[in-house]
Image (cartoon, rainbow, N blue to C red; front, side, top):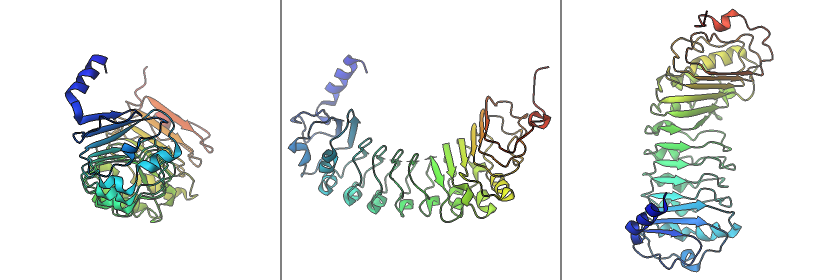
Length: 340
């Protein structure tokens, strides 16, 4: 932002906005509604650490600039602090690398709409988080120690965006299908249910953008893949399907992939570790006129490639780690619109 516009914004905001940069927050008043903290190595003053009276803040945003002292965030996020910030709509604690847990009092933030815990060391989330019924966005990407979501996450029926990229999660919590307002779900993990939770994914008709489905090797019954109902998700633009390891049951893997046919408007498809000997008919079908990128990797048992001649919009094609593929014949480009 230009300096003049920045100065104007500060004048207009007046006492309602406060940006803490490590100095004594003498300007912090009862009128403050929008609080931001530029994180530095400086120790937080007692005035900020000892917030005991209810505050009317609507936003609490951290702006990461340098490495935190390990005790800094622990001192700030006391159980009593959230009880004084019950009016918060937005809370961002992104990049607090020493943040390992949240107090149960996070459940006091009944008006919270947006919670950003990305790039923290959070390993578990308290069940009290599931009482934040107004929560619409939960960002957990790059929480590299997070291995479990709260079991009652489905109670957050107003959730629209759930970002769980680059975590240690192994399965989804039960009843995810109740989150019918979800528009963004970055990842879906097949867990101990052996794929039976796919019917929950099938109920999420509005998810769009990018979706990655992991651990497909654990799908026990092929009908579970059909229950994901990817064909009806018209807002989905990028789809990643990952088996991780071959099941050594080529017919089963082929049937699973057959049931995961996406909507024709998908633009990017990536397959990793697929164990079938061939590809289902939908991969290469003429209806995928918007597909611009296709990546096939680690398909170690495949003897042939899909017929891609119908895909007139395809610009980027990656094929690697096909151990059994010996010959690429004319069928690979059957009906392709090639120049004479």
